[in-house]
Length: 364
Image 1 (cartoon, rainbow, N blue to C red):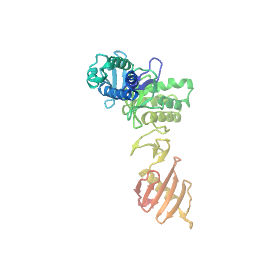
Image 2: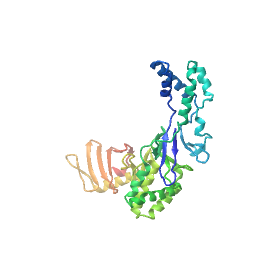
Image 3: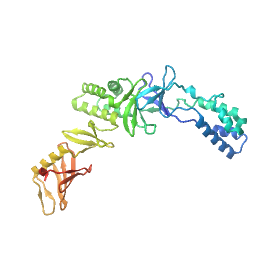
Image 4: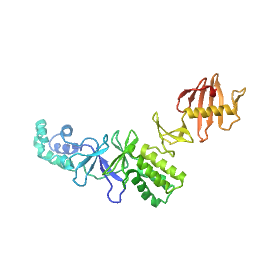
């Protein structure tokens, strides 16, 4: 489980910690070694710890914060995208000496009854402090797949985008204004990701599904456009939106997904965006197919005796027969991006995506 401590005052980054059931082993071993051998103490300590772990009341795996008004623990409901009051406080998980758990311990470990009072005292001390909020980590993102605290700093990556355009002393304030437009909050929320993709964001009083933030992004885009020249504004907006929604550091705005690939549109051409590098790769669709057909027809390719082509056009880089009924074609689009195709008979295969489509008569 993860417990978040949301920002207080002028702080802008949340803190938190990942918790698991407390370890009792070393304390039990120390108690038992006053009487038992080392091997016997180790075995008994392991068995007692395992038993208490199975019997003790402990919060379910999840993301929590403590409401300051009543000290109740709030659990983030992933499916409903909302905070739920669990009706529990940290104090409710303390194992006191009069807990019903000790009756079960006494029945299961009758041979340890002579140590029971000492064991009770130790367990109460440990469970009083098992949710201590010390040695906290900065939290930018939580990965739901394994409830892992993400190491990368979302706010740092966003700041680096804006630092290119405004005074560094003004970056934090300007970024907060953008966050306020998108999430209607004055602090940077904690982002929630699943299998590496950001799906939502949470703050102490709100939770946001990224699917429901389009109005906020529209407001943020308008705000950014009021500050910067159009080209700069589009770059900043695309970078921020891609980082927040998809975790992609790309300078072209993601327009959607095709077979799991994020894509954008550049000068009318559909382009896949690489998750790892943000680079663009042309998608072989009907629009690109039509463009290629026109280019090949207008260039007038002549195949030389050495099986390589002498090209009249400047946009086609390479064109040659690999063997009978097979050709390679490399062409530069008006966007500056290259297309590499393997043309075999009546089909064309995208060198990057390996998507095969039928050619019409105009292409041959």
